[in-house]
Image 1 (cartoon, rainbow, N blue to C red):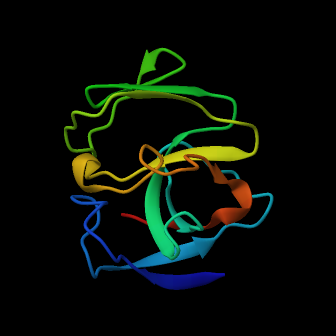
Image 2 (image 1 turned 45 degrees about the vertical axis):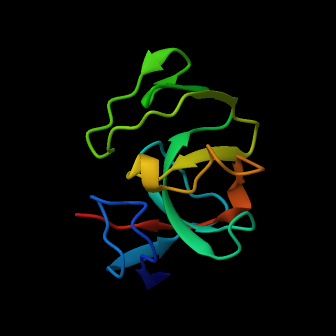
Length: 130
């Protein structure tokens, strides 16, 4: 199934802009979710649907040191992300994902949520970017 998703914040800039419409493909329960996917999330944490980028996969350790992301100790190349001053460490549980906005210092995401991990059932679609 395909639909149009309206971006409702600047948290994904410069990749996506507030108000932009993006074609989205539904994620079935067996669809593969990959690091770097921009996903449509039915967020109970925020209380509305949001768009974020998948950074951490189930079972991975995500560390952020002054905005530089490492996955299981290996640096993650993120040409899409803005610089950040944030530091933190996370262990992604089975069946869950760690998501961030590309506009790091202007994004409400896994780093700041009470429950930082998004369960697989909450990932409803993958945005189809050029």
